[in-house]
Image (cartoon, rainbow, N blue to C red; front, side):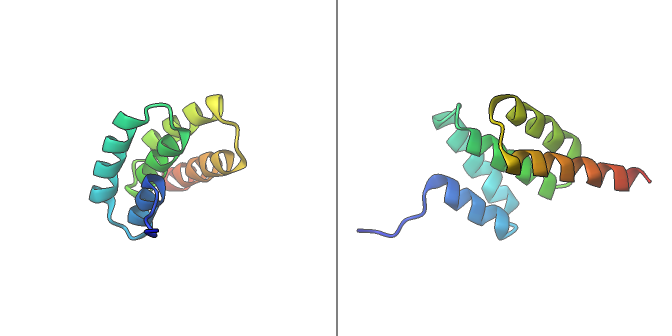
Length: 89
């Protein structure tokens, strides 16, 4: 049996390795195939945060909170809002 990463694990690895362009491309392809996969939306919001697009990250985390109430989503939404507050100071 091959030891292959799942699509979502591959995307997470790309983000963790700061390979953001590749992660974005992989996310776009994955979202076409799995439009209702909340983990893909989460990783997209996380990628937006890493790219410094905090407003988009917040918008996506807020959408996630409406459909998937998870501690990690709330945590990252709060962290992103805190980052925005720090930047505005």
